[in-house]
Length: 461
Image (cartoon, rainbow, N blue to C red; front, side):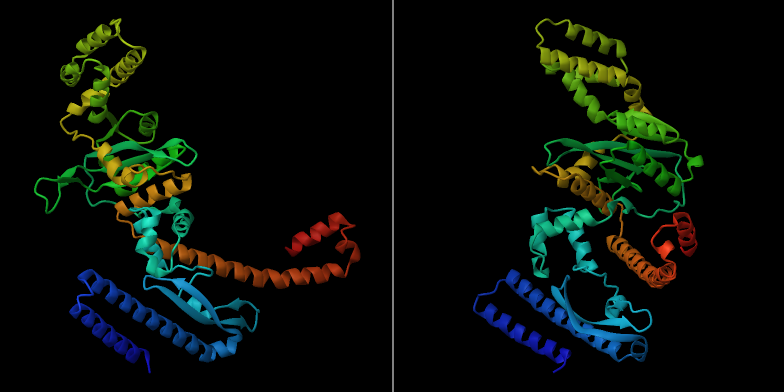
C-alpha cells in the first residue's frame, strides 16, 4: 500500500471516529479541531519520512554517486523536531573515492545542517513565540513537536547571533525635512539581583492615520533599535548608519531628539547631525509632581508656569519651598532633585512648543516593545537572554524576516564546513609530504639545526 492510500485510509477512519464522538456528545468543537490537527500532522509526518526514504534511495542508485562515492553505512537515523512533529530521517553515509572525506549526501541536498535537531521552520516559530511569551508557555504550545523542556527554548534564544539580526534598509523615495528620534529605557531585573537599563531608540517621520482605525494614529516609517549596549557609541552608530542608508541627510533640516535627558541619550547628539533635544512631557510632569511633594494642590500651577516659560516664577517657587523648615530630609532631597532637573533642562522643555514638534511617546513604546515581555512579570533574566529577546522583538517590529535570516546563517555554516573540509583535503597530503621530506634529514626532523629547519618549514607552508 503506498503513502497516498495510507493517508486516504487514515483520514477516512479519523472522520468516522470523530463523527461517532459528535453523535455521542463526547467531542466538542475544540476537541474536533485538535483531533483533526493531530491526524493531519501524523499524515504529514509519514509523507515527509516516505519522501526522504525515496530520495535517499534515488541517491544510492545515482550513476554519479556510484562513480564518486562508496557506501560507508546505511540507514543512519536522526530525529528532527518539525512543525508537523518529530520526523525520523534515515539516510546513507558515504565516503568519497578520491579524497576520502565522508558525507551524508541527503543532508546536502536538503540543506540539513550537521547536528541540528530542530527544523528551521519550527525554530522560527519557536523564537517568534518566545519573544512574546514565557519559555514554559512556548514549550506548551509546541509540545507536539517533541520539544518538552523550557531549557531547550532558552538555549535557542541564547545561541542565535542577535548582534547581526538587522533588517536590510534602502533609501526612501522621499526624504522629509524633519525627522524624529525618541529614546528611553526599560528597567530589567537580572539573575544577579541587579536592575539594568534595556535601551530603546526609534526613528520615525511623523504621525499618520492608522488604516481601519478612525481616531488612532501610528508613527510613519518607524524603525526600532534595542539592546543592553554597554557602550552607547555603538548604539548611536547603528542609528546613524540607518539614517544614512534610509534618507538623504543633506535634505533633512532638523532632527528632533526626544527623551528624559539621561546621559546615554544626550550622547547621541554627538553622533547624529542637525539634532534638537526636547525633554519629553512625561518626565516634565513627573518632576513637577516631585517638586510639589507635600502640597500637591500646587501641581497644576507649577506645570502652567513651566509650560508658559515663566522661569522666574518657577525659581521663586523652589526658593520658597526650600525655605520651609518643616520639610523632611527626604522631601528636601526630592525638591532639590526636581529643581535641578527642571531648571537644568529648561531650554529643552520650551522646545516642546515648536510648531513642527509632535510630542514624544517613548514611555508607551517602552511598555509595548520591551516591558510587556521583559519586566512586567517578576522574572530574573541573564544578560544574554534579555539582550537577545529585546533584539528579537525589535527585529520583528521592524518587519524582519526571521526565517530568511536563519536560512542565511545556515548557508554560512554550510559554507564554512565545506571550506574546512577542503582545507583538510589540501593541507592533509601537504602535511604528510612535509613529514616524509623532513624524515630524510634526521638533523632537521629532530630540530637540531633550528634555523635551517625553520626556513625550510616556512617555505613548505
